[in-house]
Length: 367
Image 1 (tube, rainbow, N blue to C red):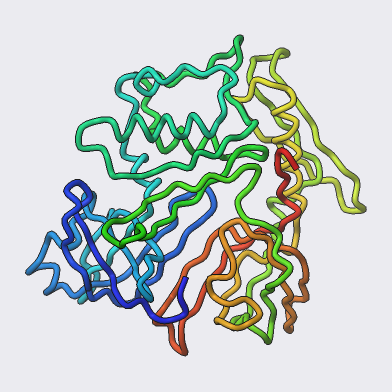
Image 2 (cartoon, one colour):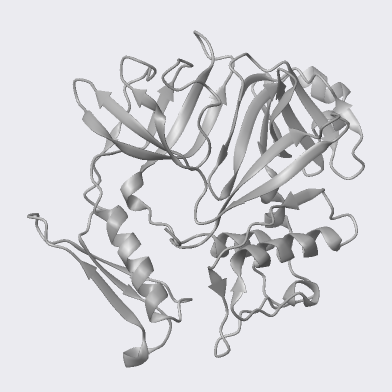
């Protein structure tokens, strides 16, 4: 991630690999990654440019890239181009968004399943292998060889992917990474060593992406440039969570996670109908209670590039110490970077809007 404004925005045909534009004039550009999601890109184009060269940003079949200082910082697929006043707005998402438009038409990911005690990372690789094995479906994504101890399927409850299921392959991946104790992923893009082609990568993390960073921080008066909002959501708060899993009636799985903390008792009921194991259900309910019990969370900070946290020094999933002090908020604590958006042409210079969640909400398998 570079400090300087992007030198180029490029577009390429997703199927043929032919470059459509090596200097697309995009304004109001913002882009970035996220944990276990594709991340987004937004910008605007001149309507005259789109009208005269409609294939430069053809949604659904065009890749878009941001390059700065000879490095690719972001890549993905354009999904939406539409008129808005005197401009055309572009919306794109990175590589994992493609799986939302694909389904398992053959069942069991083309005979790669079904799954019994199978590493979730391997199932993710199988999903991508199946999606890219179908004619006109290969976008050249490479998935890490990371392995985990988080598995799906048991002899009594085999994990299947049925051909008649209308769940997209993207939704299947989301289910594999959606809970505590499961792998995480993020999408990355880079040039290959001789810069003749693009490397599109799904980076898998186990037991987590990122690390605790004691060498950087986000602080008021140092690199935080706007007063962030502190969320105090009583509607979501609960220190008692009742979670239910699979089954019916008295046979339905049930777990309760509760603490006493000197506050009025508030309860929440949450259903996890796909969970068949007591241990898994207990883990999910404890995680649910942990995040519901968090009041006063800072969800977003906007920062400038400074030595306290130079742009490019943090990664998706990192824990960064946050210090916020203003008329309304006094907050200090470890927060996890769940994503960010770079605004390279923001007034006053490049900005990064960083999405955060309290680190205490997360526990990691294997740690």
